[in-house]
Length: 312
Image 1 (cartoon, helix red, strand yellow):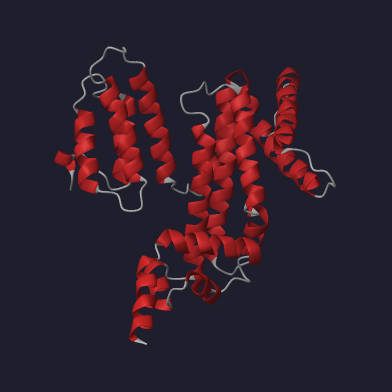
Image 2: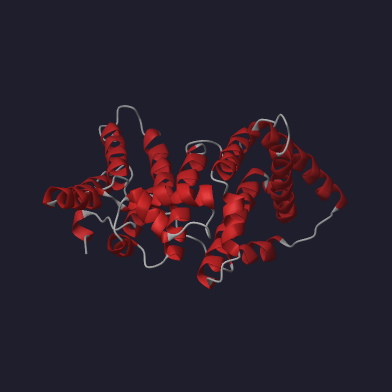
């Protein structure tokens, strides 16, 4: 009996927060937010109620963490496609759309959000609105990057693209032979590409770009720190790779970047080791005081990692 109790306790100790998030995400997808109880999650993860409440105060808090965990993985996959590439490249944007839409289908995101939105939990409702606004803001930002010459019409184009993608996907899902997602994304984007020149030619505009952007930012943004780390790492790496091949610090800086990213995103990052690596990066004259390094360091500070001399 004692051995069984000890074994159960060891299992509980080995269960990490990420394990609970992964299990909860699967249950939410399969059963929906409301139909999934805390007891369901306890049974699947084999943890006690006390262990659960050490990580999450409510089911609503768990749901928010699950969404952030899941969204961030998608953000990393999506934004990695752009690292080191021309931000005006339309083919890359279409591939990014494909990543987003496949994620929404695989994780049943739309159904999951609709289920959770009927909750009486005002914090969850506000959080889900932030998530949706953040999606729209990403579309808006990328469209501005791709079409600087159509700046005054980007707000309308963003609404058109998000709407047609959503509806094309809904119709495609009930077809006997659904189209590949990349084909849908390419088709929808091609339509927007054509419409933009028409809007500009006829001077048709529904929304002012400044007002539209402000409305998207008005309810705040959800932080995705590890995605920010991936982006800032990629931009700094791009800068370092432009250094002459015979630069003594070039390969050393690249190795440090890769090591810090791997360590920071590990389950149990070693802060002292990361701090030492950051100090070494800051001392490399070729990248010292560059905007890319400043943004990179600020991103790591948000995650609790500081160079040796700045460690609080």
